[in-house]
Image (cartoon, rainbow, N blue to C red):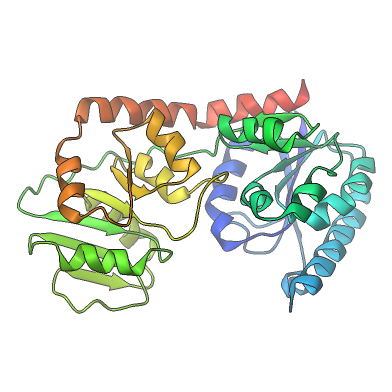
Length: 338
């Protein structure tokens, strides 16, 4: 059995689900050792814990210094371990990783890195774009969708091998809202356009009910807002909703929104703002992912929801889940060894 060293340098809270699903899959085919922050996943503890001191920073310069020190710490730990067939970095900071990438390449293992928000940063920073291209060309770049691979090869013009490895998406129990007397809408992200949400609420009828993840309390009887939902609450609300609205104020161009993935998991139509990611998904799965803008009113959204072809919706969902399954993920990881 091949041995993988799985390293999550940044260990952000938002990656816990990704780490859970990825490790669960990898452990079915590989022997896996993990290096990460103590809370990098909900049900996995790292075999080697990165000290909390490496996750404290005061400004951008200090942050990069700490990241370089963190990578040095990891390198010293890896040198004391056995040789692995593959080192996978679940997350990384572009500048510090690029600086240390040649040293990492001398550790004797194949290396692959998952790109999350790294690619979006390249459009906004010429410095990061230049430094990104200096990452050791022997390191394999992992992206989540085909158009992201095309972006790296055609726009960024990297010399690295690029492999599309799907973000695993769970097939949750198919739950359909059968109550036709009212519409239940879930907005499961705090990163929304507040003005737009307020417009939707103010122009909706009494039979339209919103549940919103929000620090703000809306003064209307058809809205429930809470800053946090526990897992059982969250799944129950998602499953009971007629559809999901994601008017995100963050652009998802070359990274994945797990909230959109969850719409496929829970079999819920998703209405979301335009980005390269949503354009791509809308083209492939138009009955599941619907693009709106900040002038799209609630009546138009409801009408589009009512016109969804349920049979085609089901076919699109099943295709997406198959393409983002554990089996496809493991097949793609195996390509790294070719």
